Image 1 (cartoon, one colour):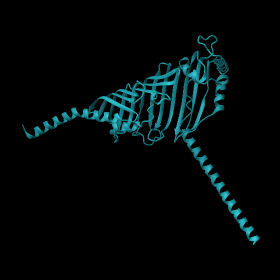
Image 2: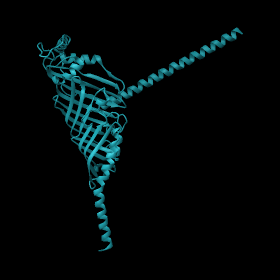
Image 3: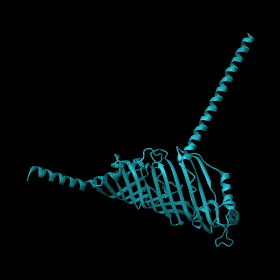
Image 4: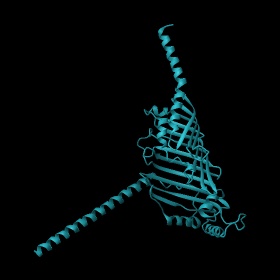
Length: 395
């Protein structure tokens, strides 16, 4: 056997051995990275390396809260595929894409720290960068589930979003450098316990610390009796029947936003004279007054109560216009019923205009402040001149 042939065989054997051992070393590295994440810890069961595709798959990733009272893990991902995004590589950009299959995310809300599980105290992006050092340009969730538990504790109210599918594309802005909102986002989900459907779409700039965005959101056909736990907690009423849909548009630029929320109820009934459960006197009159108000504000043709709530301001200071909201209720009832759809009248240009108007206001305020200071200095100099004049006259 020739020496060259022996060398080639040795290299092939070496590559095969390296390929067999690589998943073991990667698995150790990943589990070591996930073991200590502050108040959370994680573990992966298996990793499969696919060198030709430039990818690896993580099987059975679980992240749990340490010393927590919650049985469910904060995050469970049966299968996650992390790979090089070849389409971007051909454009000269080395970025990656991640696909998570049937992930489950479990949030819990409680004043008791041990019973709370939100993940807000951990910088998840730092650990994601350790697991995948190449910047992510596409992230997709296939058939996921998000559980929000203990929204109200007594009695307990939970919300589960199932069949959750989402995709974020062009996160690193590989495709369109000139676009102010280069990253399209789309998400859909069902809320089977409430009968509702979620549809969210947006264009975003995810490269900023405070992302810019322009979103549309629909959360339709939620069964009102299904949210009675929340209604009892916050309004002391029960819904007998009806549905509610939420429509919203919002645009934000440099932390300033413009938009609206449009709630629309159909066939809503609150008061029932003969309720089976023992109802307090206070709740009886609360529901009676709520039903009377609902009757006055219901559009008789569409059997709906609706309004449009304008929202504007900054992330630190949200402003809600009260009178337009009230007028919206009256308009829907007596002039023209709101349609169960987006109004399509909020654009990213509105957010840009808001920022420009804010800059004009700031410049005007600074100008007025400078003028006031000049007047103060002028008055001080005049007072000093008069004081010196009086001193000369005395001498």
